[in-house]
Length: 109
Image (cartoon, rainbow, N blue to C red; front, top):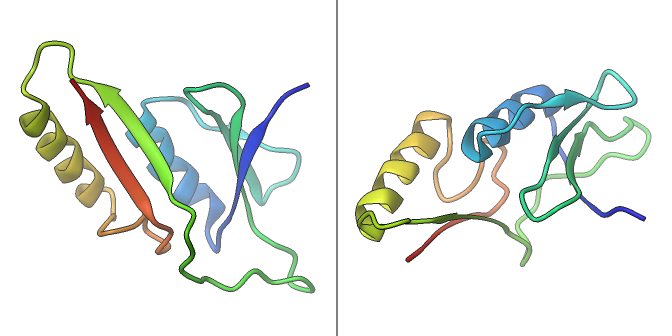
């Protein structure tokens, strides 16, 4: 048995590159040309796909957010968080990912 997080996207390749860069993992093609996957640090996969045009998934804010975590490992947690936030913003993030999905960055001491 395995588990995954599934995220609908208008541009799955772009969103996969965004999360791959933030998680520092390689993206992999999924079972179709509009599907990408990357290993989720806690196990399983983050699956990013384009919905079928006959069954669209409109962008909407919800209560679900992807929470990416890093350990500070002796470095200043605030400084590390600021660096990570700048990296995410450089990749197209604001309060969410490039497609508006909520995103939480958390640095643990």
